[in-house]
Image 1 (cartoon, rainbow, N blue to C red):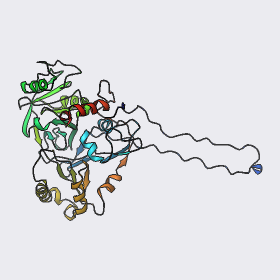
Image 2 (image 1 turned 45 degrees about the vertical axis):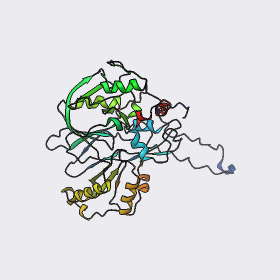
Image 3 (image 1 turned 60 degrees about the vertical axis):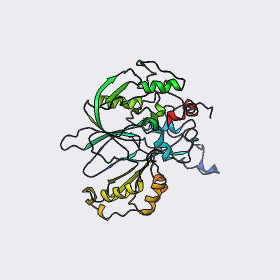
Image 4 (image 1 turned 90 degrees about the vertical axis):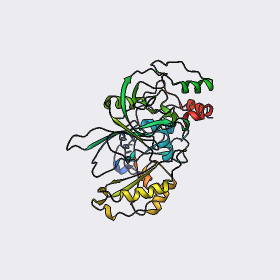
Length: 389
């Protein structure tokens, strides 16, 4: 286990440099060296784009956002970058195979998978895709307006405490909730030598965080967390966890009675422009379905929809090599599988390189007060592996 302490991004970036220009004095006829050319200007990288809210034409497109690439700083972890860009742990680790999550090293190019194929589900209310560990909220659109979607990474239930699938609704909402552990949860904690009180009051140590949306399923909710690094992992007792900054917006925007649909879709297909995209996530370890057969069915269906008849889409041919590569190496990034003569890595290499800083209009303000460090998460992983898987 690493003993290093990690810290998050320092505020402020260096923009360019100044080049000294040596000026010759006196008559030019006495000069023995030509005047050197001016030093080239260092171009500042573009600011990153916030990746939590998009507008799109629901009659045409199923894909929002864009993949981005950043360069890791000396003390970055992938968990740091994930929260900065509003993605979850498994998402960013899947997008960067071979990169050490806790010691990515300064200068490492990190793919940030901030492009999303929307789940195959009605685009209304809240849709949670367990395989992606991601929530999508579709506010009601007024006539003539584009559809909006707000999306955030989530943490879900452990294998032995599965988050259920199906349709429910937001039954109630509460700010600064107390947590009343169920008897089964208290029994588990007592067995592990960590007994819980009957009620955990509101505060920084409350596992439910600052806000909760209770579902119509008894004992299940969407809530915040006191452990932000657990977002994008299977770490809860079945509830859906969100970053502390994300639950506030969902709490304020989602009315009681909003439908909530929970699905498990590790392979997503959708149209954008003239291309068909595939977004592949690693299947959950307890998902025993035949995903090859499911994908064949989905490919047939997506090519017979009204969207598939638009413009040049009927002529789009699947790049079979790219499809096979994307399925064999689920990278959590949306890839246009109808673009010919490209590889998965080549497509990701052409993503936009941006500054490794908080995106404009990001949900997080960068305040890490009271947050677990990476070394503490490693300690949790060593002592309680089931808690973060």
